[in-house]
Length: 140
Image (cartoon, rainbow, N blue to C red; front, side):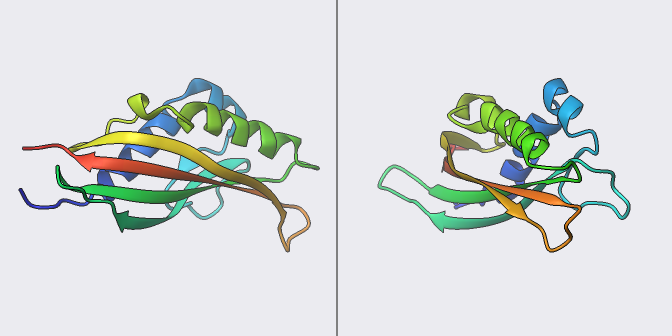
């Protein structure tokens, strides 16, 4: 068996899970993005950077992937961003059975942190949510 990266299929699974949720769409009316288009309306969600580390064992190939998700809002205060971040947590934290990653099984999906930041632009609020996702490659 050859090791295959779960990164692209995981990105696809995250996008499908978040973009396909009506409750999140009602909160993040600007959409869910991988690459945010110019002029996107706020609030929106961006699936951001990742870090992937081998997590192999004697039974097969595994990966530990840390994914950062960003929430951008122009609402005053943090309430809107917190509501969006909370919904993302409901969709992903300990919901590994809901992530269908082609060629891989999601063993674990855990929230590491949710941080509210003040952007240098005082009109924008930024929330950063990070998840640690462990996958194992399915035999083909």
